[in-house]
Length: 277
Image 1 (cartoon, rainbow, N blue to C red):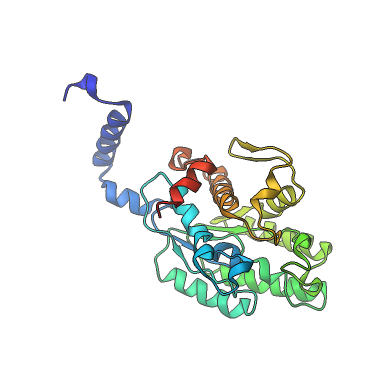
Image 2: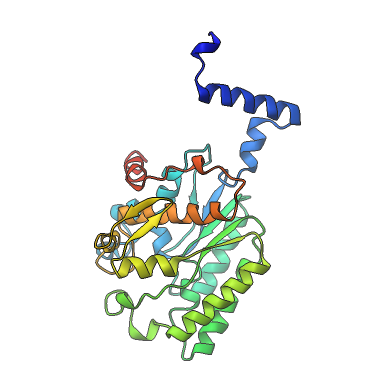
């Protein structure tokens, strides 16, 4: 093949191989060290996939599983995304949290994603704000056993889901949510492997039907509420694609050494890719 027939991508790949050879690093070893190599998802119903028509799971719930959208959004070589999340997490978050983390770590993960892992350590049962903050602290303590890159979401205002998916007693006060998010920010600053996804801002914009920008892909005001199901808590299929991209966008923002081209940033294309998975 003549040099003129080589594409820019081919030339780039050849140069990449020369660099790896010079540094003594094989392409396989480089791939295995990338954060995309072995991704594990932990958390609750948003991560597992949930729709109210299938309370105990089913084909539609499987189509809403976050791992499918994370997997589809990654253009870079990567292993299958493993999903350990459980829609029943809200019932026993302490027990399930411990179990999921233990199982995740046995997979030698290069990246753990728990965008809704901390949700039920603030929401759910709690007589006082202090009860909720004490429980939230236990959730953070569990996550301290993770030493690989870890992505978690902050605590959103899910009041739009009260009398739909949540009862009033399960709702933390605005004061408790704010205190939990302040604590999360401080905790993450002490654990450099942690990236916090602004789930609270995502949910605020979507529930208010305000415009949303994800890595330059804009959703206009009046269209974003359609990313949620009727329960106003769980994303639909397009919403899952947008959430997956929001997760990667937050991660790349604090890891400038990673290549943004590793991700397919068009949520419609991500959604189409899941049809083949």
